[in-house]
Length: 114
Length: 115
Image (cartoon, rainbow over all chains, first blue to last red; front, side, top):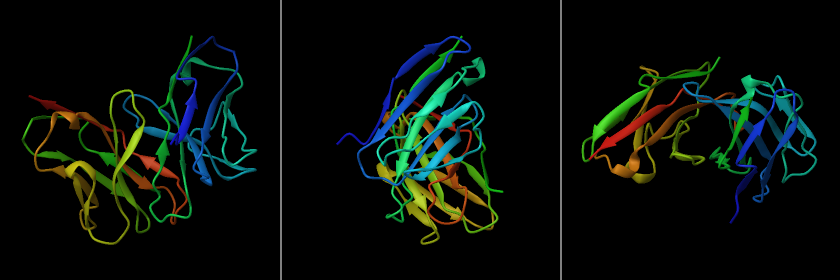
């Protein structure tokens, strides 16, 4: 049972480079989201999606783009990486069909921007 | 606006002694509250959830939390700490009413368990 799969696990970028963090879930969840985790700040919501074709901004969306063309995939794009985007990124998903609001998290992507 | 404050950034206990991780919340409506745990180099796992049913919520691995509206608190407890409990713990509140999946995380509390 794969759950939520994030790739890559580690990435080093130079300032100004672009890249895409991949996230896929195999649970047919409607809701998917991206968080960044920084020391002493908990997790902060970047973008989220309530279904294919629908995305919206979270708390810290600047510098990131998302799209949701399928239920399974929710990639996060950094168009021009900045050192301030050095962080650990988590993708999460959940189902609206449950009353549990339980988020399933991926194992994270550690990104360093030099 | 919704918010959570974890009152301790670091808690250290001895194995076999009780654990108390403190969390206060602010909410303009009846909130859903959660505790998540993150073991080193792992993703987050749901420990327990409060959704306006019983105020004392039991979770996995012997943890429980009590919702106290008068004190706007949702503290996490465990009677006897185990070495495997060493991890980062996050108190979380729902950002909006209903099941939207949008959550607001506290800053985290690192639990150290000494032998």
